[in-house]
Image 1: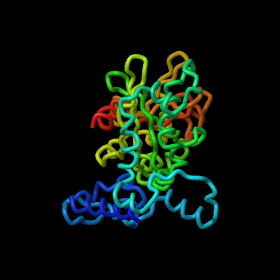
Image 2: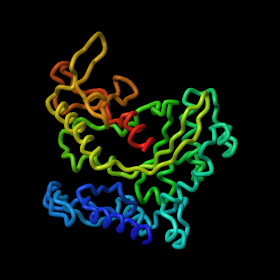
Image 3: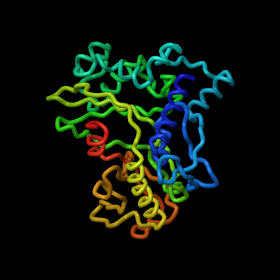
Image 4: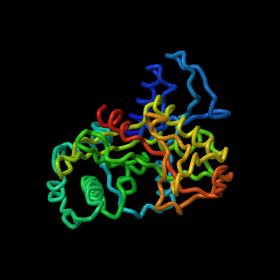
Amino acid sequence: MEIIKKDWQLIKQKVADGKAHELSEGDTFYLGACTKGANAQSVRKQPFSKIPAKQRAYSLKQGYVNHIIASIAGETKEVYGKLIPSVAVAKKQTIEEVVISKFKPLIGKTDSELVKQFQLEYINPKIKDYHSRVSKAIVKSVFGVPQDMKVEDYIEEFEKAEIIVKTVRLKENNLPKEDISFPNFKYEEIVNEEWDDSNFKDILEHKFLFVFFQFENEQLVLRKVKFWNMPYADILEAEKVWAKTKEIVSKGKIVKEVIGSTRYTNFPNKSFNSVSHVRPHATNAADTYPLPIKDKLTKAKEYTKHCFWLNNSYVRDDIYLK
């Protein structure tokens, strides 16, 4: 109830600030402000701004409702980790403050120091993806999560709030080593979606926990931990990428040209948009999804799996450095 009360206060404050049109499910933890109306475009006047805002209603997050249903059905046999053990703590600290306090004593420590502290020496430093594995293992250790589980599934508050955890490794110039990927989209589904009900928008309206490590010579240093949800203006930018992608698939114009054995697509790349882009996310070229309409150039009836990505420059400038 204390967490829901804080969520309510945040929603109320955003309306009071004339920003009802910027409300997002990612603003809060358990209590959401979901769109509601005859259709997704239903709007009404807001009291402190001339900008019309989508009609909204209070709602409990899906992860929270799933937890309630599992409890009623007696299916909560799992042992969850709790960040907030009592009402007294909930009154004094937010979920964000509790999480940040866990990481605060570790900021500035190297991966080798943290490996020793959390007894992670079993991870072979000679394997190709060592830095990726060790950084994720460190985050799990901070929360006391078993290494065979995800933080999002083990920490009760994270599961209820549907928080997405992203571990990012930065180069020495602050640019992430990689863009951030999301789950693959299915071509046959995206052509039948509307933006407000799309899988991509749903993901972007989640709350994220970013844990940033940075390379310093050959070692990783824990630099920063930050809760984040995408600002309204950036969601509008991401919508342009989604809309262009839907248009390309629905017209059968995925492949722009074929040079040798390489296919070049019309999907929006990094130069198209400052926030997001589309590129392959598959084990190999044969890892495909069926197409709703044949590709006009290649006549292909299926195509290599693709997904939406956050640009690494966007992650640097609008998340890490802000």
